[in-house]
Length: 86
Image: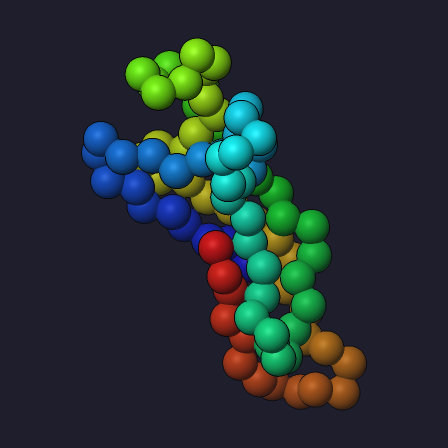
């Protein structure tokens, strides 16, 4: 499975490894009751930027970012619907 984050110019989201503890990392999961299981997600390296509210540089995603992960049907469940949560 591939997920594209299309982030508008002038905006950003935290990477999966933010540099401050209080920042929420980008993560991917499946909704409860999904007919699939999600393997290990491959996150790209974040871009390092400095913003006025933090003394430290931050790790963020900007522009188009692709996240990838294997998605497998659960044994015996057959075809079903799975919803990714980012």
